[in-house]
Image (cartoon, rainbow, N blue to C red):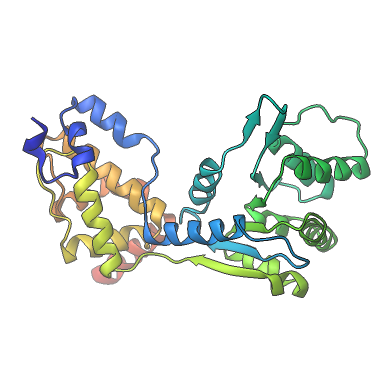
Length: 307
């Protein structure tokens, strides 16, 4: 029966056989989708993982607009190199340690988050000096090869003094442990790193750029046509479709995926079982999914047309 759905990639044809409810549930679940920029970023991360120790370790800044998939890339990287426990030796290895920046970028809050990321929970009433020493020792014992700091732009919420201390902490850790550090965040993250010339000199930058109506977007649309579990062939290789998607999402990856999920679910519910340019005309369905900037821009355009 799955042969009926030869418009889908072979690995996804069995999904089209499921009930409407099962297909909608499948669409709503997180899954890794290989995208060119994401794979390129993963390649850069893998290079850091295998980099030999030396006095001045290379580091990476992964930045882009909110919704461009930074956290998903980092989580994928961590999943590919998950921690392992050797029962014979009684040792845990954690090649990747990923820390989300605390709301307050103080040194003690940062080291607390770092210890929690390494599954430590009992370190109350410990001095900052001891906490710092414990974190460094534990990273070494776990054989950590890359330290990842997500949402680094949160450091800008601190005072200038707190920001300097935190940047010094990053530089201290990469020098002391001789491991690469990966920082991720928005454009503000790049600005934060640039405030310290010594750090800026060792951080290479990788920007996740918004999608444009070009060949890459055509490939993405072709991928959606082949993996969304709809029972009829969708017409997504269409200039009008791509224009509408870019207009609604401003090329932000997360918004594109939300919009495609919404129109696919609607295609299942209304029985059309396919997506084409008409699928993107229902403002009641789509506008709640786009940014307030897009909505404001659309309203301004409507007012201009009315005038």
